[in-house]
Image (cartoon, rainbow, N blue to C red; front, side, top):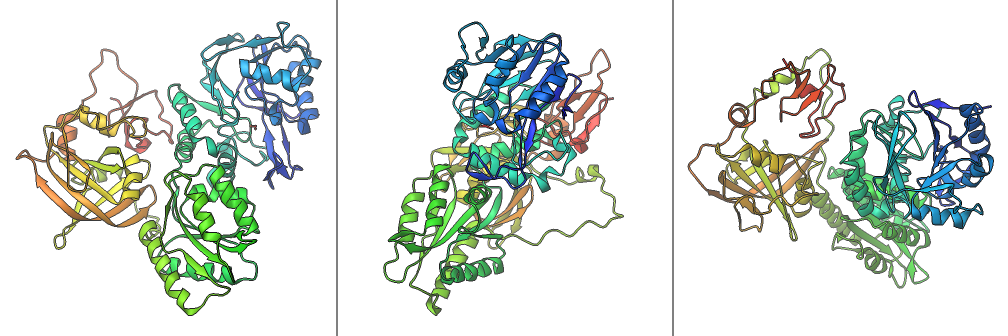
Length: 617
Ligand code: FEO
């Protein structure tokens, strides 16, 4: 019997789910199954977007026949040739000989490799980037996305309804459990770990290509994402996109230690357990795994999540113990970047594992090592306790300590967001430098903490590139903005990411302070240099505590305050001849057009939520 699910009035899911498969791609355990999504377009012309894996073909063809109700199938779009989607393309063509297969040139080559049907008789329509195809009320265009996940991959975008058919991107392991949309489940709680495991293991290696695809996606409006595995996204798309930005940039999501060990007789595990206890005593978040027990796909995903990774293993056959060797290969093959490693080795007569692991891991871009590698000969001895303490201390200093979670708010207390606007702030350009890269962003949270020694705090959103640079280099400058700073400066440093543009591109006059970081020598009346001594995790933001290492006055102009910015710098909404219906962001002035502002709306410019919007009067 058919089993279909409505996505929109004209689009229906006709895929299938598999809970019997043990290993996806014969490599990745999928204890909660997987879905193979296929979408049927019910328009003047009929269209199927991607076929399915052979395992669910019976249901797929029942679903397709049900949707067609005897009509002709006009188009089959093939976005990706991997057989978990394309294995049934040949059978679709056999059953519906009048169908036109829509694909790009690389896919056409693979069609000939996989199937016997003749692609040269007009039944294949080759499309290129930007080509369009109409089914009547709906207009489709095509976006090439090579290496997300294979070289031939493309995505299909329906222009009228702003729907992106994203191929493997934005998918997840796990069957759908009767749902169709990510907002019908607690995705963060129940599916995010599997989405991360799916992303990191399937396309984690290809961060550059994913970034290129995200850049293209950033140029089109997207109201819905229909991936080939997992749920359809129609709400909170920005949240999931942010995860993809973090993953594709190899940015850790958690400041803490992933501690993975293998242990033949328990002594290496003993060292790992002692280290874990010392780390937790110092307030560091720790997650432990035995690599001989947990499948490496889970560990690769966790390695993408955590900032610091400890690997503790035995020397075996003069090399690295089997399961740890496999994991290290896996991490290197997935191109993980910007992580700090600490290594512990054991070996009763010739320990070599740490050196071999370090050699392999050194190939990773941005890999750093805690210098005091620990060598155990057979069992942990009293002297090792000092070494483990030193390693824990070094990791704690590098990873930063976490405070206990903030207490829950008193249930009856009311929070009026506008009360927060009564706080007085300054406005600052926060700058950082990592190698050749200089970057900066706008903050309003620089505060003097103590006078002797001179210390300041800054709170920085984790989504900012500058945040990650400070996390890594532990140094920054704060340029204190003066009242002459123009709105364009706030746009330049605040409304675009240093991941995409060079912020210090000569537009504003800069100088370099003694710590090697640039500061603004224009529109700023002073600058402070900071060396981070503590980094406290507060969810969306990190609070950096820093010693002031340099401070200079640059002009006598008054400092820019938040209130001055709103009153004199930020452009006021222009009066319109016709009454404009919509909502304006109180932070940056962005206007959302529409009577009702969705509760989960996030400002595309300054990333503030719906609570910071007010209705246009
Ligand atoms: Fe879901 Fe790359 O196939």
